[in-house]
Image (cartoon, rainbow, N blue to C red):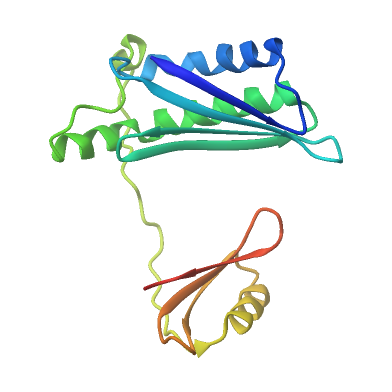
Length: 182
C-alpha cells in the first residue's frame, strides 16, 4: 500500500491539497506490488515569487524514484510531477525488473494488462558517441571556466590538490556543483 507523507514549506497543506496529491499519485500504484508498505514523501514549497515547487520521493529497496517540478500553479506542479514519475517507471521498469531478478529479488514493478498486450520496445541504453579525454590537473575554478568556455553542463578534470578525478556541473539553480572521487 502506498502511504503519503505530505509536507509544506511556506504553505499550509489543506485537506483539498492533500487529497489532490493522493489522487494523482494513486495512479502509480498500478505499477507496484502493494504487498509491502511504501511511503511517498511529498514536499510542497512556495517561493517568494509565488512559484510552486513539488518534490516527490518514493524510496524502494535498492531504488529511489524521485521527481520535482516548479510552475506558477501548485496543482499544475503536482500534475507534472506525477506524469514525470509515471514516465520514469514506464521507461525503466523492464531494466529494473531484469536487474532485480538477476540479484534474486522479486520484480519491483508489476506489468498492467494493457502494457503486456502492447508490443515491447527495446529499452536498452544506447551509446551514440564515445569520447576519450586526457585529464589535466587543475582547480575546480579552472574547471568551471573550461566548462563555461565549452558551453557544457559538466566538466571532468583531475584535481590539482588531491590528484583525484572530479566533476564540476551546472545545477538547475544556475550555481555549480562538485563531485569528488575518494
